[in-house]
Length: 138
Ligand code: AMP
Image (cartoon, helix red, strand yellow):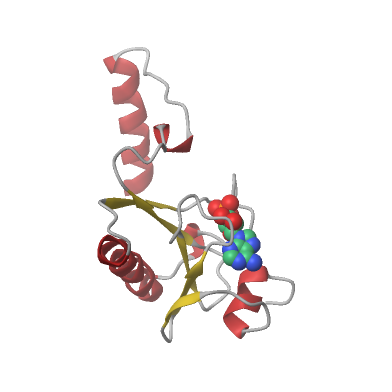
């Protein structure tokens, strides 16, 4: 898509350090990594957010995320990883991308970027669960 930064990286018009290149998915290093090796995985097709991702691209995209999550352990001796997708809110590039951030205990990343809240009580949690269950099954 014209004017999309990640489409431009996929097309090769904007330089990036490509780490994975398949018919459905491209992976490249994030230019401002949380930790070195932080990788972004994008569908080749311009898909804005996770909500628009078709079934046939879900396995290629998240399979690639799984492969990179495994590879960073070997490549960088990371103990694990943080895998995340911003959708609309906090999403600075409107082309779906999965972040894979290499993690190691004591690396200094705390709270996974966001503050936590609490349910007022178990009844409120149950109500949230019911509402979402009903929406998912409707
Ligand atoms: P998000 O904030 O979830 O939309 O993530 C977008 C990510 O794209 C950020 O982590 C940026 O550092 C990264 N980014 C922006 N421009 C580039 C670029 N030209 N090459 C690689 N990564 C980029």
